[in-house]
Length: 342
Image (cartoon, rainbow, N blue to C red; front, side, top):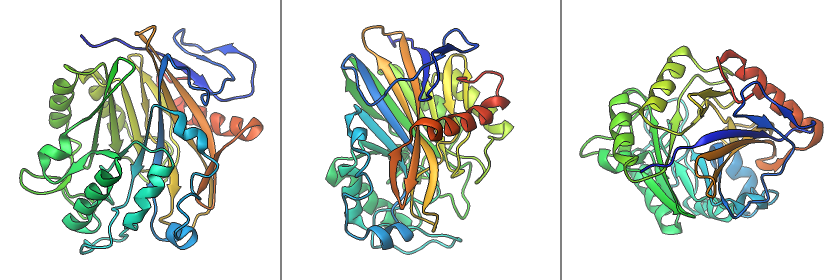
């Protein structure tokens, strides 16, 4: 039988201990970096692209991107959205922007402590089947798990399952509502991403939750540069929670969005950019989301926000007033929801 999880929210902010409006949530100044052995700690970062400007600046300095992020490795699981194929082969598909990164850059993920990536996004197929298949092979060769795209539809919809400290955690990921210049859905006998279809998602969650305690869904969705999700996304996310998802992680807008609480489950609509080298923007603020699953009280899990600064594609944790400003922005973006973690 699946464990039922109640959510507690923790936010990095230098304020006195205060209770929020929802009795199941409270905020306190605490450090997620010290991982209690009784918890399963999972970190989530947003969009990662090691192409273009990133490659020109970093070159073969594989240690550079995560040099100030050593604490990232202390989690039980870390996950990001890998938004480029890892390949030097393939034919570029016809679209406005095509990204690809050196196969050797898989080492950066490994050195940074990344355990799993979602590859359900609008750039993983930029260099067609060859680019996607090379990415899968390069990730497999270095021991990094992946979800949301594959050599065929079955592979693309297959979950990744971890069994850690007695809790089984399942991951699924989806992108796109149909085929177009940025979307190449996997078919029975051809590669691509797992389509963001409610029919697929309902079937996949139903099959997964029989054997796991906690279901995490990644969606690559929304409108770029928008700080608020569309009403259609909110309705969609609620349906997915109703199907049995415990936590939804979103990305694609390249900016932060709010974090909703629906039926005591968290929906983070967009984590923004994490390490994004696809354009020339060298400095920006973003966040990492932490989830702690409590193994001693198996009906409890917590969500924590970690404000991040990125300078020249190197992230580090913000503190003091800079941290509080990021928290306030996320709180403002969350004001559109009937219930949020604030």
